[in-house]
Length: 386
Image 1 (cartoon, helix red, strand yellow):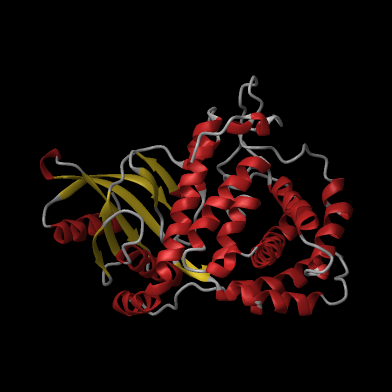
Image 2 (cartoon, helix red, strand yellow):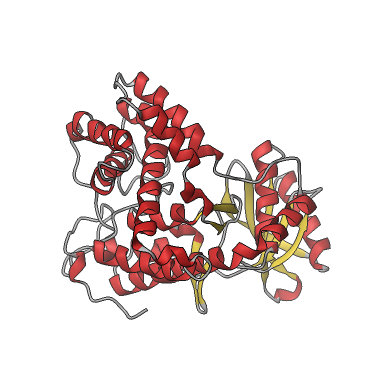
């Protein structure tokens, strides 16, 4: 056990008022290490999360402590020590995640999990509208010198997209710079709600009492459409990403929308909702292209170095371009749509690869799900009631 883990276990023992030990690493990244630790006498276990002292590690500590302190979702917070950058929380248990369900073999279970995930995300977004001041107070309480996560990355992505297009030898269409600025200033940004910040399927645990969200390292207030877009064009910044059949995606989106309408009644208007969804589609297409274009032009590969199965980077990026071309109208962000169309037809369609697969759980009823998710008969699956 390294010194950071030993120090974190010691701090955790002080916070819970009893010795914790036998740490089992259940997650490790550049910003944090996550351990499941037993309590004295075998009375259960807790999750101990120790954060690095790098800038993003410090911001992630504050985000996690603040996000859990709001009490809207996630494991119960048992303690947070800003000096040590350690958070101790309830252990939800070694239960399957939504990702496990989606790459499994049971379509009704996967669809039910998606709806539970969407309901929980929509619920906390709606409930958080009146808690913005509390979030600010909590951030000051746990502050380690970093600003909260916001949506400034939307404008930054616009600049990175222009650079990526230039590097790829793609001439940007007229008006693109103005539209990228419009994405960063659009009125859709006014419909904000709290989010854990990384609502990917592996951060949604299917517990006996319902879906439990974990990992609040990127928590903050973002436009609700950015999360809603995860339903329509799934999981734009996640590594466990495949297609969701249209019928399942539509049901998932309706569940999320029904929750956020409680705090934003105007989102019940289809015109307002669809405009927001087109905005989010454009934002996520720009995000993916800015991040991946230079890399995948030279070489394809898995989304994560340790992930051999599933769609590749080129497949995912081509899918983002396809969805943008399909979902954006000529009147909404035409230059952004033109970029997606140009890249799709002049770059993506020249890549020799199979179509972007659906999640294995929604593969053909009589086919055995495979790591590549081959199968297109998903819409025929009966869905469990919400």
